[in-house]
Structures are given as C-alpha cells and as structure tokens.
Image (cartoon, rainbow, N blue to C red; front, side, top):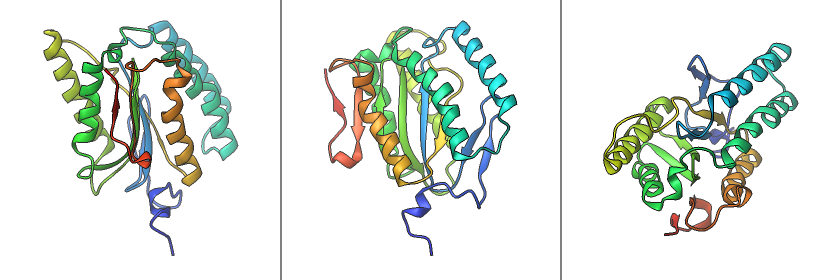
Length: 217
C-alpha cells in the first residue's frame, strides 16, 4: 500500500499528463513539481540559440526514455547552464526592487491551500523558482498563466507601461522522491547565496522552516 508521502512523488507506472511543444511539461495529479520562470530580458537571443542548438544535438544522441544517470547528465549540462546564466544577473533584474518582488510573492501565496500546496519559493532578481503540488483538477499551465498574467499586469500598472514582462515559457520537473524534494528545497534556500545577492535583492519562503516570507526592504 502506498503511503501519503509516496503519493506526492512521481510514479512512472501511472498516467503522466504531457503538454507543450517547444518545451514539454509533465504533470501527475498531486505530485510536487519544481518550476522556474524568468523575465523576458533575462537571457539574450544568442544565449538561447546556443543553448537550444547544443541541447538538440545532445538529445539526438540520448533519446528518451532516460535512466536516472542520463537524466542527471542532462540537468548537469543544460539546466545548470541556464541557472548559471540567470544567476549572473543579466537584464533589468526588476525584482531587486522589493516592491516588484513583493508582487510575485503575494501572487504565489494568494491561492496557497486552495489551488496548490506551496512548499517553498525564491524570487531572484530576474527569475523565480517554486516548489509546490497542485490540488484536484488544477492544471499546471493554468496556474502558471494566472501567476504570470496577474503579476505582469500589476508590474505594468505600477510602471505605467504595457508590454511583455515574462518569458513565454517555463521549465518544470516532477519530484521523484523525498531526497529529490529536499535537494530542490535546498537549492531554493541557497540560490541567493550562490548568486551573491545581498539582503533586499530577493524574497525567500520555506514553509518547512515555519517562517513567514522573508522580505527585506
């Protein structure tokens, strides 16, 4: 019999919902996922083209399904490269301003306990990481659309402008087990330190710590 904890993690033997063409997204009911999304100006087109070309070449040599070692190799090479670029602080880095970072943090908290269970998140200067599980029939793409749409409208309203705020896509990973979840939570906790950010340049929330969202003005 499965325990409640096991129901929170990826089960490769039951249905996995897949959507998206350019960047496939996976969802399994009740399973925790780790999602990253970024500001539209956080990466240059040349960086994205380089990353995409190298990834496609690698994928041709490593067709799915992958074993755990191959998946690890993929993330070491491509996910880590993307994270390093983002942590370098390119673009407008809008969320160094606590007002705009607070808009994102408020959006993440708003439906916590109603549409999803929020475990942790960090709002970095030009991107966001969040770890959460969806409730009932909620779809990942709908939750992401809600977060990105509402925050973009609020940011544009405050700036008295219109236009694109977020990159169109996002990256997500289903959580395999308790160890994987702890690694993702630890990554969120340590990401500001890795990027050498000062207090006031990020917003961090870790539910496990029993602390409210940390906002430094």
